Image (tube, rainbow, N blue to C red; front, side, top):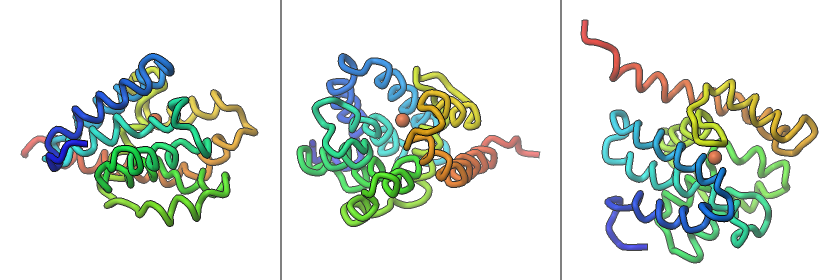
Length: 193
Ligand SMILES: [Fe+2]
């Protein structure tokens, strides 16, 4: 990874994620691009950190790439790959590891200790922003309301799947993140009286 601070991270992350996902998992790549577009749209509330968030958005699902799958838990596999292969910035690794309330799925997979021992939580405003972007973007990259997105995940995986159980446990965390970001956006878009 180039030593350029946060400037240029998103471009680097775009190229890395595109190479890993575009051919093997085109729908996942479409979703990823939609999440990244949502991240860019948060510049009014994140300022310079929108580039970091956009980079994390590009990278958040790279753990699904066939060559990266190790534990089968994509936040951990993706974060380990970024840390070990690319010596990526800690903030990016942490955001990928913990995106969309991943600790709950980690518990289901008996990977909670591994996840939390290796990757600390990032600051809430960035964690919530990435969760907001992921959970308001459908699998084909289009914008969805968070309740539509949660329903889509349940119907895609089915009621007995570990991911559906994890999403059910994570729902309060996801809804709180979406609400926090929407509140922040409302304060800057509200017209001056
Ligand atoms: Fe995602």
